[in-house]
Image (cartoon, rainbow, N blue to C red; front, side):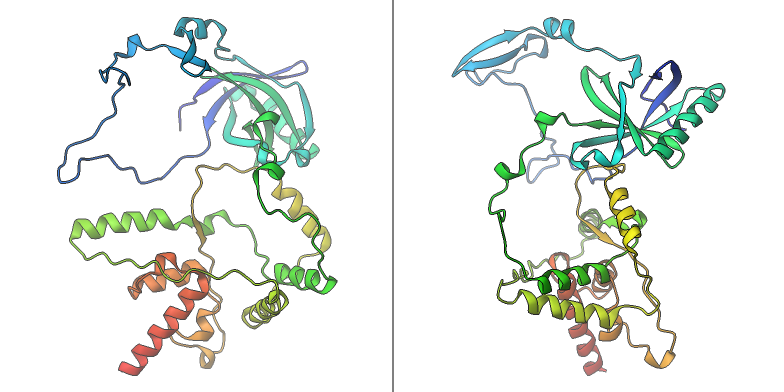
Length: 361
């Protein structure tokens, strides 16, 4: 069992529940040290006075708020300590809001909230059940590690989760940050209908275990290859071309036709009510770590008729594979430039390799 990073009480109304806070996510990033080229000597950062170029002891460092060019208001560590929010002993829920009303952009980090002791399991379970049935989240201010947070407490999978949140003035306005956003774009009914059909045919079930960090895998393989003395070859690969406005309908139609050809029989369709429920569920946050490049590892449909089975690089079978599965096959065949290829480029490269192998045999 993990050790809690914080313990205190959760209150709402006259109900009080002793709780413990646990980290919900962890990073698996490959970590490197900085070395001087040509040596095994570590490179370390030092605090240096930019005017004298002399190293400064940590005890001699104060904070300065710049009010004009080169003019600062100096603030001592003790002065900041006096106004610091300190450490909250209580998560006091100020009110409950509909979870679906909170835009996911406001959610930051996720923590687990568990009961502190078996004697408090019943009141804890009551809050979990009530929040789940109501579809609401409790909002509370919470101080931890010298910083004050806006938090949301919600029910998920039979326990409570606490999400730290961004304040409203921390969320940037998309209209001022993002360029070239369309104001009023004229779209034909056929274009919208075709795009909706394509989205519907590409709909999949959300299975987080099917997604993994392919970049991390590639970094680890790079380290292993260099350690083993294997030759490293990399290729940028061709860049994907943007869809021309004139060819938009043609691209949509071809995508739709390609999806219909590869769609397994017996695929379940999503009803209107099911789509609405999925959309509401999509607005709820999940435990998340850093931003990563991810790829799916979905299972591959197996043809029932043995006569219809094809080779490992056959076009019929490749068209049914996910990008992750195509990438794995490209890795097994040592196809150069695979790390930068799109799904279609991986399929094309595998088909060409298969043809060369068949020609050679």
